[in-house]
Length: 499
Image 1: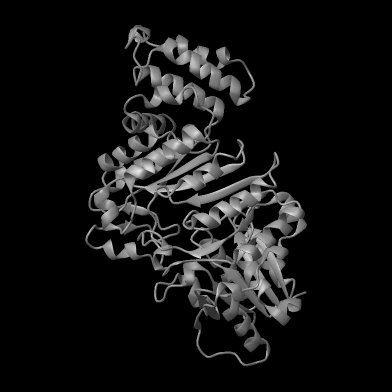
Image 2: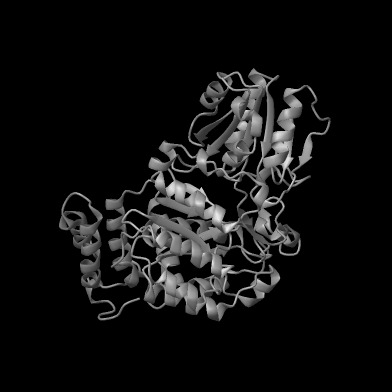
C-alpha cells in the first residue's frame, strides 16, 4: 500500500521512467509514503487501473508524453469512473503548455507544467494535510541543478540487469530548432561533474553497463564530454555500451582523439541532421554548419568504430519531396549505419506551430500528431513517405540487407528506394506483418521485374544476406520460384549496370 503512486506507461519494458525517479528522489519525508509503479503502453488500461487501485492510493501521478497520452487518457478515465475520490496529478511535456492541453486534463485534479521535482512534493504535502490548492494548473518551480537530489540510486537491481539506464550530464539546449521543445530552453546547464561521475561510478559498480545519455547536446562543452568519455574508457569492458546525442558540427580534435579510443560495439552517436537545406534551416532557426557536419560524419564513419544513427525529418515548413530527396541522397553518401526517417509531429508548445497557417501544416488530431499534409506536400505523398520510412527500417536500417542495399540504392538512392517502396505496397497492401522470407522473395521479384536489375546481379548479394539472416530453408527454395517466373529477356536487361 502507498498513499502516493508515481506511475509511468513506458513505450517498452526495457525503458525506465527517469522522470518519476527524479520526483521520488526529491520527495524527502514523503518517500516512505510513495512508490513507483511502471507499466507499458501494451498493457490493458483496465488491468493497469486494477493494479493501481489495489494499492488504495490517495494520489496517483502520471507522466504524460506524446507516445503514451492515449493510453494514459484511457487509464485515467477508468480510475475516475471507478474511484472518483482518488486524486490524479499529471505532469510531463504533453500537458505542460497552457492552453494547448490534451482532453485528459479535463478529467484530472491537478496538472504541473514544467519542472516537477519540487512542485510535486509541495503539492503532495498540501493534499495530504487537507490544504488543497484552489488552482488546477500549477507552474513548476525551477531550482538550481546542484540543489536537486539525483535519482540514480533508485534504479533497482532488476533495472540494472534488464533495462536501459537513462542518465543526464546536463539539461536544456542553447539551440532554437523550432520543431523541438528544447527550443523553449534558455540554455544548457551542466550537473556538477564530480558529483555526476560519482553517481555513474556507483551505477557501474552495481553492474550497470548500458548507459543512454539524454543530453540534447552532449558535446557542447567539450572538456566535460572528454572527461565523461575517459571515465568510461577507464572502465571499458566487452559489455559496456554508451549512447550520446551529439551536435554534428562540433567535433574538435581533443574530442576526436578520445572517440577513436573506443572499441567496436561500445559507442553509439545519435546525430540530428534533419535537413541539409539552408533555407529550411533558417526558417526553423536551426543553426548547423552543413560542411562541417558532413566532414565530421565521414570522419566518424572512416576513422572510428562508433555506430552512427543519423536523423532526417520529412514535412518541415517549406519542404518538398524533391528537396527531401536531396537531403536523403546527401546523407546516404556519408554512410551512417542508420538513417532514421522521422515524419514531422506537432509537439505541444513547440515554436514550429507558428508556421501552421502560412505553410498549411495539417496535423493528425490524434497522437502522435503526425503531419498529414502541407502547402507543398499533399496527403497521398505524405502517406507514401510514411510507408517509405517503414520499409526503410525493414530494409535499410535492419542490417539484414547489407549486400543488397547498395544495389537497390545505386546512384539515385531516394528515387530508387521510393520506387521500391511503392512496389512493395502495391503487392502487399501493408507495411506490417511481412515475414523476412517473404521480403526476400518480394525484393528479388521487384528488383528484377520492375526495377530492371539483372537476375544474376541480384542472386549473389541476396544469397549472402539470406544466409546471414538465420532463416531456415535453402536460398534456392525461397528464390527459385521467382527465378522460374521471370519473363524472357529479364536476364539480359542492363547488363553490367547497377542502380
